[in-house]
Amino acid sequence: MMLLAATTAGHAAVIPLEVYNTRMQTITGFGAACCDGAMYPYGTDTKPVELLYGPTSKIGLNIMRMEISPSFKGDENASWTNYNWQGCVPSALIVKARGGIVFGTPWSPPGSYKTNGVAQGGNSESQGYQRGKLRTDCYEKFFPWLNSYLKYMKSKGVNVDAVSIQNEPDWWVSYSGCLYDPEDQVTLVKNYASMLDRETYPGVRLISAEPLGFTQNYSDALMKDATCRKHIDIVAGHLYGHAPLKDGNMKSAAVLAAKYGKEVWMTEHSCTDNIDHLPNWHEQLIFAEELNECMLAGCTGYIYWYMRAHWGFVGTGETKYNVGTMTNTKNKLLPRAFVMSHFAKHVTGSTRLTTSRDKTSGEGAGFEYSAYVKGDSLIVMAIDTTKTGHSLNIILPVEVKSGTHLLSTGNETKNLCQEAPIVLDKPTKDVTVDLPARSLNTYIFMIDKGSTALRETRRTNVASAKSYYDLQGRRLDRPHGLCIERDTNGNSRVVMMKR
Image (cartoon, rainbow, N blue to C red; front, top):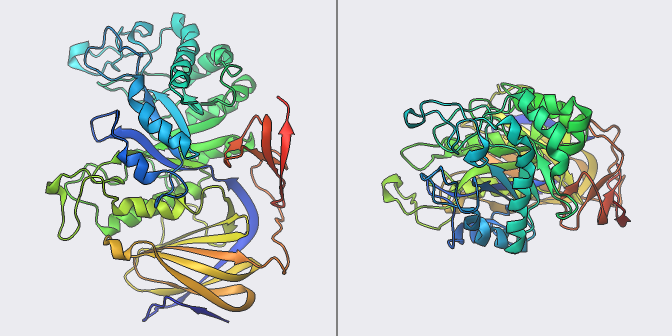
C-alpha cells in the first residue's frame, strides 16, 4: 500500500488513528515576546527576529508580542524603569516586513492613573503593599493612552495589529503591574472601549486582559455582555499553573469565545523555565505536548515568552548551561525553536480537524495527536514520549497521493526536522507510517484532487458559514477592504468588503 522512506525497527504495536472531516478553529499562528531574558526590549539587537520570523526562516514565527511601557518617556513616578516604546521598534519593523503580526500588552498604565500612584503593581515593601488598580476616574484615559501608543508606533513605521488591556490582571506583583477584577474589565470595556480609534488605525484589534492561568471568569464575563463582545476581538490568557486541557481553563474559555467567533490566543508561557541546564529531549517533548494541547483546546494563536534564553529559541552564550555536546551558543537556534517550527511552519493558516484520539484531559498514555487541513495538504501531528517505536495507521477523510514525514527525535541538530518522503502506490485513505520512540512527527499528505474532495459534515463552534482573512492569511473579525473569503468547503476567493 505504501512505502515510507524513513523506517524504524522494532515497532511494538500498530496504533490506529482516524481523522474526521469536522473542521474546528483556523490557526492564526505562533510567536514569542520581544524580550530577552530579564533584559528588554531588544533595541537595535534584532538577531533573534531575523532567525525566527517569516515564511522563509527555519522556524516560521509570525506573531510578536511587545510590552507597552507605562509612557513613552517613562513614568515620572517609576524611576525603576528605563525602557520606552522605541525599544521594540527595530524588531517590529522586521516582523512586519516579513508579513507578521505585532501586538502590544500593557504591564501597567501610567502610574498617575493608578490607585497606588506608580507603575509597580504594589506587592513590595517599598510600596507599602499598596494594590495598584486603575482609578475609576481614569477609565476614560485608558484607551486614549493606547491610541497614543498606536500613533507613536505608526510614526516609526509600525502598524500595530492589536492591543491588549492588561498583562496578568489577577497577579499582584512588585514589578510593573495593574490589578483588575473581571467586573472592572467589563466596566472598562463596556463604557470606554469605543474610544479605541479604529478609524485612524483600521484593522487594529482589541485583546482581552491576559490572566495568569487563563481563568475563564475574565473572558466569560466579557463574552456574556453584548456590548463587550462587540469590542473584544481576541480572548487571551497564560498557562502558568494551568495546563490547557488538564485544568480546563483554556478549553473552557474557548467555548464562549468560539461561539461568538472570537480568536483564542495563549499569549505567554515559559515551558520548563528557570532551570539550571539546557532542556533535555524529554522537556522538549513536554513543550511539543503543550503546543498540541493548546490546539486541541481551541487555541488560534500561541505566543511563547522569551525569544532568547537557554530555555527559549535562541542561545544567550552563557556557557554554564551547556550540557555535553549541547551548547548555548549566542544567537544560534536552539532545539526548542525547531520543535516550535513543526507547528509554526506547517500549522499556521490551517484549520484543525477532529480525530479519534483528541485528548479530553491532560492525562495520556504517552501519545498525542492532532490534524489539520491547509489548501491541498492534510497534516497530522503525532508525539510519542514512550521508549519503544510504533507504527501509526491513519485513516484519512480523503484520498492522498503522496506525503512528507518531518521527524525530530533528540536535541542534537542532526536529529531535528529530518525530512523523508512518504511514497504511496496509489491514492488512498489508509496510510501506515513510522512513529519512532520519543519523537515529534509531522506528516504532510498531499490531497488527491482526482478523488472525492474533502468536505466537512459539520462545523463546530463557528459563528458563520464564511470566514475572512487579510492577504497575509490573518483571520479578520471585521473584514474590510480587499479580503480573502473562505466558505465551509474550503473554497476561497478575493472579495472587496465595505466597512
